[in-house]
Image (cartoon, rainbow, N blue to C red; front, top):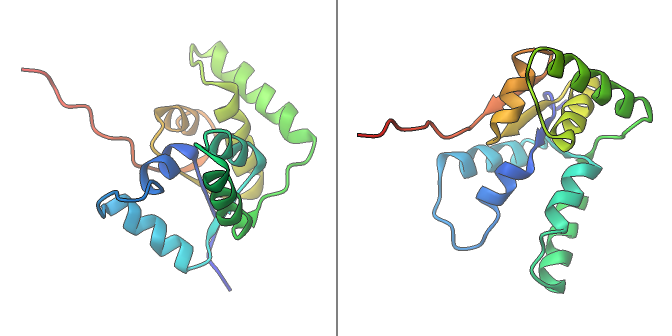
Length: 143
């Protein structure tokens, strides 16, 4: 039986998918999760990724890759949960894009961890029960 699922956010896919990129710790992490059959996706991530395809061949390659992953179903109530999450966060002065809130609501409901390079997920996780594996690059201090 596989361990828990990881929803890999577009912010990570954009870092690890382009051909010719050098091996990295993040790519190795994604490869390990893929080998363990722990990677999932959902419609919003699919939309973000395939809409950025450069050409038809790239589009087909992305669709094929994504179709091999676990699909996290999205019930209608996820929209309401994302809206409630947005409302609670805004009342605390935290503004997060709707797409990230929707992905967060899906991950929370599925019990999945969001693997990301997008600080918005860390912001959500600090105020909600979202499990994240953050690969947000450290910001270096200027001289």
